[in-house]
Image 1 (cartoon, rainbow, N blue to C red):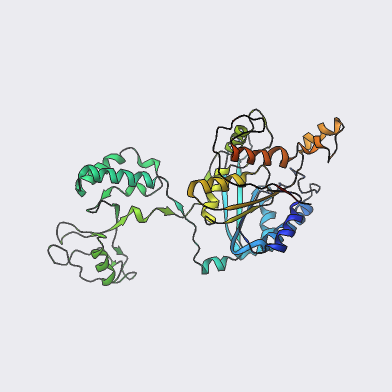
Image 2 (image 1 turned 180 degrees about the horizontal axis):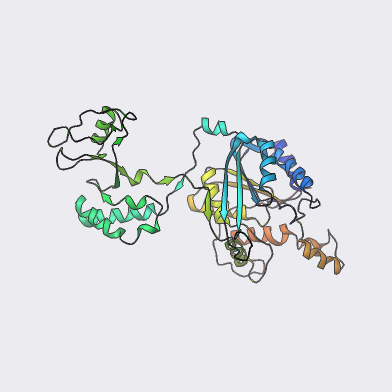
Length: 413
């Protein structure tokens, strides 16, 4: 955790550690709402200050690295033009859309939308390396547990276990990711599965040929169109227990798709989640105080960090603000035993409203009283100290997740 001007620190980092960062997340100040960058509320200056930092950020990324830039409606157009110029529009990976709280008093729509624009250092390199983003399907573990319980209770009867699993599914399907509700069967080995067709439209598969029923040794009724694969593929499916045959050859067989081989899915780039959770969480760390306006939710960042980077990734945030990125990394390491490392950079900017109060009291930048209210010293540092020690600044116990992590606090010259 580095206190200092982010441009100066970035210049030093790229001098000594180029191409060393796997993921960069930044939530830069929105133009017209903050002076954290030290510029007037002018679009050209906002773009130029951000451009200088993005150029260095690109040099810090590894060949497979990605950068995530948070932005709102008012600046997403300018940001896309700027980021295209720095990273190349061919390296745009996605735009994540976060639908937060809706304001019913607005004239046209309820608003509440934030964006995270994601670029790769080299999209082509990611494709060449077969990088694929996946995340666990919600509830898979519960279904597998229910299937194992049904199998144990049935004492090895696939039919009885299937009956018990289907009973367990009653009234539950709406709680799970789409498609999971189809996994209602248990096979002779106790594996939970669903059925899928072995056919494809005519001309798109491997034609029609005879597949023998394992009991009658007569050709089964094929599905409409072509078989999904050549004879060697279907014969392999038979040997692996991946085909569900009927009682005889007069029924068309189905392919068995096992749940334990379908544990993850491609993430959807849109999601709904109240943005107030970030504020509530920070208020639990600093009860009775509002030290930082609109902090990001560390759970949201943790989700996308897990998807985009590996368990040993180096993650950089050079607009660290309240320190949400660090807590997201700690959360992931605690969940999966990863060794992710976070590098955070922020200045000690004092909010504009507080500056007026301090000046009225005769305090100036550099004074202890002034600096004590800066974002690094009043929010980011005490937040991180609290969540790794379990003790707040005032000595009270913090009742929340406490992380076994090492944190170094540095100050740039």
